[in-house]
Length: 399
Image (cartoon, rainbow, N blue to C red):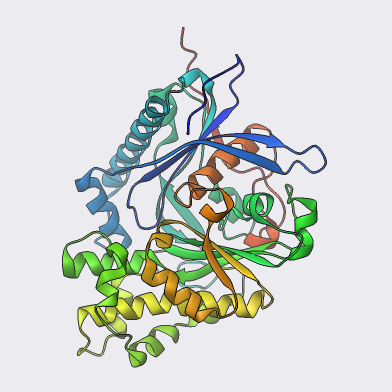
């Protein structure tokens, strides 16, 4: 959807993210309206689209997520610029495709591509905590001529948090209800939950909504995509057909579920540097068929989401899904089966395209930063307090 009329003040924000699966650069353009009482936003999504990665660059990104050989400093520097250039191209293309003007965009919010995410330390020992996203924001600002906000996660990590998830405040504003407990489930490369108790809905969210929690639950599309690519040559399991051709291996599922990370209490977050194909291979017995492993990985996602929800919001009446996983009917069916009595649906049922939710979130985070407002929820990330996130890269004035 595009807008036909503009005033002279730029009030649109463009958000971009390439998630853990690195299946493309998601772009959303939105206008936000604050409710005066609590500054909770209403979002008008004017445009959303996913732009594919260059095939060679995506191969590099996926391999890095599967513990490929370490990069040299020169290679990291070059990759940072290449990713930034790809994001800049996606932003410019989105503006053209939407029929909007560059002058209408107040700021770009770019998540970048996560290279490593280790908020608990190198070996879980609490030291050397870091998160690293690539995608040179200076390249984006210089190429597009638009103010660019990036590097959202590291300030939260510096404040003792996990730097993730960062979107629960927006989920609360857009999807909470005064009538029922709800959860928002993002099914990207990694799955994460936002917990929205019913009593929060009456306030409409806000910059620091009470009672809202959120955390990663474990792998989702990332492992299934990687396993599918290795054994079928396809970048993802279209319609869940590969998984549907196998059966769940209960012994393998038990070994996967035995991973200590799943038992950790929130706040917690993870990434492909923890849940990668090497991790899967370490759990195999050697007799499993590829289709059975795919079916078991799908069951792992459904089981870990269900276990986490029952442990943290047992009264949830509704799970609202977003991200690429909502297009996998086998996964959505497995989730519904694992969550009897709970409605499992897409954000589309609430008027929000499930494919643009994360990009919309980074458009909102850019706005928060530009306005000097916090973007994190300490109750979610575990940070010492609310923080204004990201760094602003202003382009040279274009004459």
